[in-house]
Image (cartoon, rainbow, N blue to C red):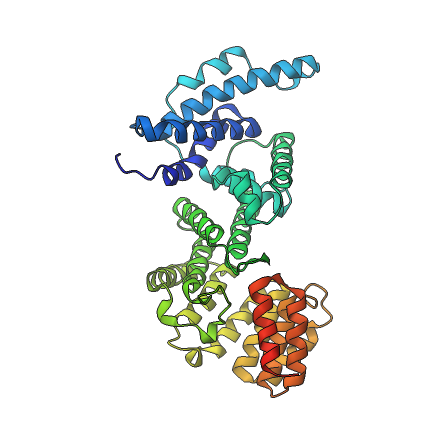
Amino acid sequence: MDGVDIEGLLRRLAPQVLGAVVRRYGHFDLAEDATQEALVAAVAQWPGDGVPDDPRAWLIRVASRRLTDLLRSDQARQRREDTVAAWTLPEERLAAPADQPPSDSDDTLVLLFLCCHPALSPASQIALTLRAVGGLSTAEIARAFLVPEATMTRRISRAKQRIRDSRAPFRMPAGDERSERLAAVLHTLYLIFNEGYASTSGPYLQRTELAAEAIRLARTVHRLLPDDAEVTGLLALMLLTDARRPARTGPYGELIPMADQDRGLWDAAAIAEGVALVSEALPAGDTGPYQVQAAIAALHDEAASADETDWPQIVALYEVLLRLGDNPMVALNHAAAVGMAKGPAAGLALLEGLASDRRVAEDHRFYAVRAHLEEMAGDPVAARESYDLAARRTTNLPQQRYLHGRAARLGR
């Protein structure tokens, strides 16, 4: 395995190793710590000693031995606190499994379901998924979400404690619970991707490492559940959206709106894969929101120019999304699409109905859409005011600069 990308290999193997250790021992929190220590050991040893013939088995063996030590240490502490009887393991179970050959099963999906346990908040689900399944360090996750590492450490520790307290079994949930938990898994990956594609705050428009990680994890779920149309739809949506990334910023990191992007820079291979996936997903069963969003993204990506965008079809697809659920951002995007398809007055009329919806009325995107439609309608004074209002409501610096620039272009 000369020339192997050790970092990439470890990132791919991390969830499989953790899943195998949790399945064997339980104790998600201690198993996660043990797996991280095994990964650190690999980083230290493999460059000099070479990658083992079976790197997954090596990692599981090292993590299992470390977990045995952690369990014994933790049990000793529990004894001192007179609570060991609630969870202690027989001595023979502690010692024997560390040297047993690992199972060939891939527990990544079970691990994702565990990280998205309903006892956790969405923020905790995201953090735990990136740590346990994505293989990111706590420092990397903290940097991605612009919080101190100590804050993220506490968040992840609390999440692991909640998992432990829930006594959730390490297995795939059944029936309705499985559907609900899969929806949480997909939503978590969707949020991770969105934060990577359009950062809520900070100096950069996008964080490519988060978007790439979300796509990698979505591919994993799709590999494990290839017949689920919404899983396929989510992967398609990510690919079709991320395909535009090379054209979204200029040489200084400035935002370039879709209408002005050089479409020759878009990733044609990602678009082709995404279109094939959404074409596969749409006839496969009940239509879900990720499939519809992917279909909208495909219409944008397949248009040779902004002027050739099929806005009436996009409006129709947003109306399908509105029937699927009450989502204020979908309603906002629908208003924008109506403005493009039927004229700005029609879009502005729909925005009036959203102005009283507190879920969206103070969001910078509401004012940005209104500004764009007001500018299209020939009302530069109103548009300038709306652009300024939008700029004051976003904490992402490239978005602020873009919105202030649009306002300044309209004069004072």
